[in-house]
Length: 219
Length: 298
Image (tube, rainbow over all chains, first blue to last red; front, side, top):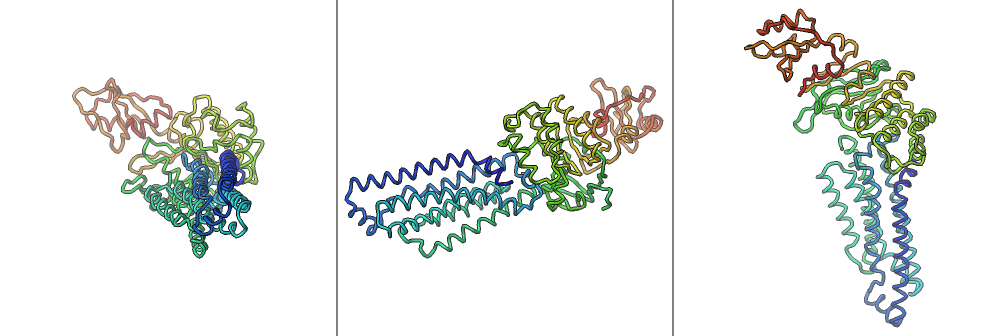
């Protein structure tokens, strides 16, 4: 039933985000095609392989912006007038209720980020040799994690009823996002990705703390 | 807790920082009654309701609702409690139809007949969005949602907020009929005290300083008296004491005396404070008059 409620609430935003990501995918493809039309492919292969030039750098902050927007669209209506109390009074445990909300948001965000990765893989694969595709995808994975961290960070901030903890949550989420964007170089996160993913995953159970504080006295 | 008690407040103390809202508050809400929680602004009615709803943790003492501690109500107990939040909280992005679909999924005993009966009175399409409704219309949807859950206990926090007289009456009549027919326990707060006279069996008065009076409405209206007394020239206005509960001066100087005692004892107490009691007259009063007399005008 939480899925039903969240679908009603988010469907307009999801359509908008889906359109935005589709437009970006088209832009990415056309931009690469343009580069290959005006420059010799060998030169571009050299720039990508030797110099480390990113031909898809514009994708970098799209997952983060999408995560932030989705988190805002999902949790702002819940917190306005303390409306989350409606959900917290339903005969479901607090943990299950909050995690269900996050599962819906993460599922929707995962779909968008998955589309980004497919679009990136197809675009790069159309113009570059196969090894460049896996390289592009692993380069983009930290950006995707930043999107997830942005979404969870927004949830942590909005669920939190106390201002000082909101600041702490914003700093922690900002720090995780910063780590995800620390380096744009190829392979920079090859060994750090599992640890970074774990760090982002820890933000999921962390969201239960502000929800509990809200239930125990938030407005 | 005996089965007869729906809500027990036992030695409850609650404070926000250093500010004490409730101190050592105790009362019971018995099953099957309609209870009105009354008090002036700022005495902590909403705080108490939040404590009972499980949205605040008491600083000290205990609050139990249907046998469970209010700050840790298990899901099965929450299913038996219907809450109407202040401001008629609802999912404004949903339509009436979607609202029913969502909430009915959580309540196996969902009473679709009760929901539709109340909703049909609105004369709105099931696809009407809650966010596009007036406060009164939204209050009806919220009431329909809560009643359709078929709860044992209903807690309504200031249901009158934003409602005109017509919607208040509709809300009230429906609630009374539903509660009486189903033997429901109801705890309600409202800033429109005159409505309570039609609704409640029992009243719980909260006063600043933590004093609480829990009694039946009929006993309160029978025992609490209102007297008028022309002012005595040269004498200071009488003060409340063990007999005189409250004394207020009307704009024309007439003394409004409130007490839980008959005219003889009141006259004696006034006389002891230098008042001429020849003009003392008992006056009939509504619950609103009694509320003001009991809690004071400011």
